[in-house]
Structure formats: structure tokens, C-alpha cells
Image 1 (cartoon, helix red, strand yellow):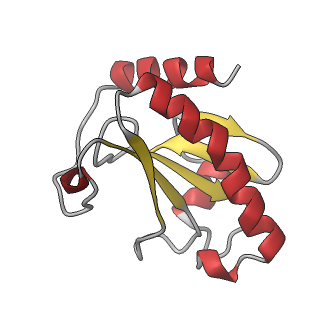
Image 2 (tube, helix red, strand yellow):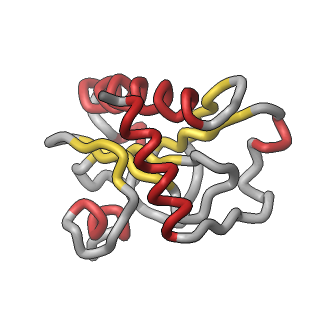
Length: 131
């Protein structure tokens, strides 16, 4: 059965897509821990990130780099933290999380909720930084 991320890749589920190429997709997390929280995924459905072959794993981080820099230009933060966590979705993924204080970097914090308009405005600002 396809993961929810594969369904996003295939266009079966909508997402706020930041960037995409033939191997990877980056999109805003629909249940963010902070504003600007994004996910970067390989299009190849592999459950565990360290089961990706070395080339694909390194390319994932290279793909994520300009996205992280774009998010940092839009969302006031000291850094963009990265995390490889989660057991809910059996599809390798990298979290990009704007960070000003360590307590923000907790998946136990309540998830934030934004309107479609707020997600869309944030998405467009991030995408503008990628040009």
C-alpha cells in the first residue's frame, strides 16, 4: 500500500509543494511544530532514510539545502534544524524546522494550525526565495 507521501507525489493528496524534481519533493508540513516546518522526501518509496543508497541520500541533502536557506529568509530564525524522526509514515523524510530556541525543536509540542490562505502566502514567499 502506498504511503501518504507517495500519494502526495502522485497528486492523489494535495500538498503545499515548495520544490520538486524527478527524484525529490519538498512541501510544507500540514501539522507543523513551528511556522515554516517543511518535509523533504525522495520520490522513491523507502521506509528508512538510512536504507537509501548513498547517492540518493546525499542528493536528498543537496536538494534540501536551498529550500532550508529559502525558509530561513522568510521565517525569522537562527537556524534551520534538520531531523530524521517519525514512525508514522513508512517513507523516508527529512524535517526542516526553523529554530530560535531548543524547546521549539520538540515533536511533543502542540501542532500549529494555519488556514489555507496562511499556508499559501507562506509557500509563495518561500518559493520566491528559490528563484
